[in-house]
Image (cartoon, rainbow, N blue to C red; front, top):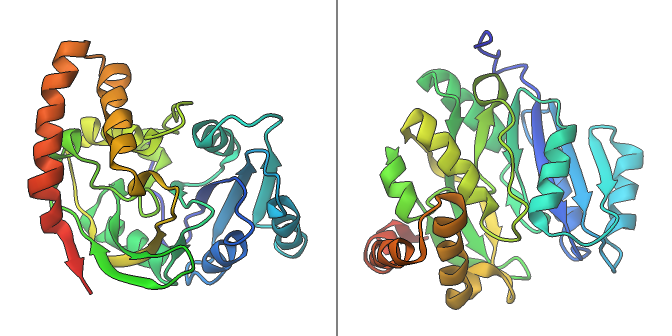
Length: 262
């Protein structure tokens, strides 16, 4: 293992897939530019947008050389876009921010400080929910204070927009080309190695719930989580069905305890 990274000077690579995000991408980029920790690179990979997303990003690239922009040749899904961005990343840390979500200004600073204080290679945080136009939904999503692999196995408690891991410790963790739930697979890979993870116990980001998002569709949530048990974990159909009982129990009775009104 390499020498631990100096957190104050660490380069953070921010992985951002985009697709038809013209309404949100400028605000998302600005939330990164407003970070108190300024040593970052934002790698945006566009998945063949048909709106003005690309031209908006290009205007930021002209003015800020920390923003790097690439485009896929054919629409391939967020997993492929994230993996391409990851291949370009040079950072001491890898973090994730989708093209419609937002970070609070001290997000990176606080997480890097938390990693230093806890001598940890991975952390995440709580986050607040906003609607499609940016209004608060008065809801904060928290997580277990000492998240175990078993807990994560039955529920993805790590908000993708909050996760950050050290490349010196893990290397670059490959991202699945599947169109949904690639983030959960990354966190499972991490927790399988370190067994426990602690979140920064405060909200450091805003998650935008859009009308067509996975979070808005419970049926899709079941389908894609079942696929993770089948393809990522390698369970057969019958075993995956039994595991889904535990997943449903967690979703209906345990996870709601971590959703707070604000």
